[in-house]
Length: 351
Ligand code: DOR
Ligand code: ZN
Image (tube, rainbow, N blue to C red; front, top):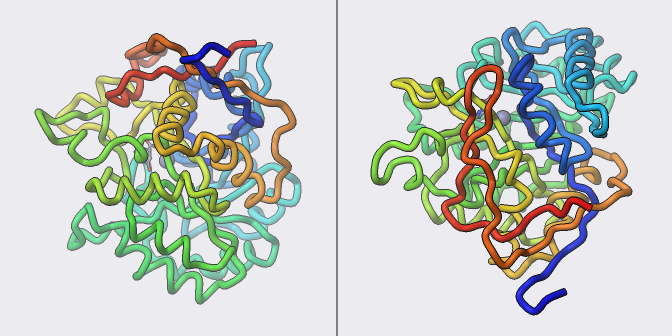
């Protein structure tokens, strides 16, 4: 190892929150995730959404067909919870290993969420059956009440929806996804160990200035929207703390540039390509490179009750900045790659 270069070997990471889309887009983005990650929790917000086990199985087959032959990757499928979800189908799908979790989108919270849940109490009976069978619930934790300011929607969700839900269905295993606030970080730290949280790479790197200063920057717009700097610092502290109830879910969410760079641009940051390199940078800055493996490779499987991956990846610090593409081509147009606004020196070594 040269004097200005260092490297770190980790168990192969998993991505506990990922959008792979379908068709052309799936084909274009999947190899980037599969290059670094062994498994991913695959979001069900397709059009139409993946609402039952049969649809999840068909989607899993399409993902595996899109996977280049030489690559290995295990998609962990989720079902999109609606007020019509059939609990028996969920439990059977979970027992047969066809699904790994169920996803709760409050209706209208984000991309393709209009068939989500309007009244959370209406799904309590399903959640009770999930709790009894050990099926985890992934939650997009934002209220959609138009009276609530968009920057407050996560904190308000915790008080208005999550606390009552956890009292009503105490045994339910929950993953609160893509934390963006100090409030959520604190809530998770103080909660019992039936709940954990994912944090994205981009929310460790950007605050809301990235979206709004010097012009409107649609490629930094995602849901939940990035908050002010104090929140970003709390997220970095949480991710690098070693606490096993915070782990990586990239929420890499590709959209064609034409749909992001528009009068009504879609929410989503595409980070699958450089996520591990960006994380190495962040953990190095925080003096916590030794905790990256926990965050990216160990805490997630432990919470889901799955084994960690046996194989490893090697992250290498290069002297010169590593060049990532600004955008990738897909059959549905170009997709811009997350730009962390700092030079990236880390790279996943191809052994
Ligand atoms: O920014 C986001 N994009 N947040 C979400 O919750 C959904 C995702 C998407 O599907 O594009
Ligand atoms: Zn998402």
